[in-house]
Length: 126
Image (cartoon, rainbow, N blue to C red):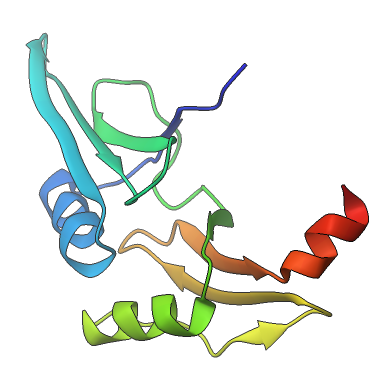
């Protein structure tokens, strides 16, 4: 089994599409309108095997209801600086004993965490 697609409920599709592409750096996989008022936009973080989907007519939850999706990065300082340079509001980095986090939200309040795990911790728990 592989997790490959996570629906993200949003209120304004164009605003969210722009946010994820321009502020966070996700790649647009497709933007299709198969009919019956449905629109599906799939976006993927660079290097990820898992994508997100936003759109209309998908029976999604309330916009802003998704909490703490993790984007795992090799260097949280570099990733955070890159997002700040794109104009993203993001928290300071907190170190939780070798696991570092920084948090941000999309325009609807869906929340995300950047996460960096010290490689020695991964080996201890493997």
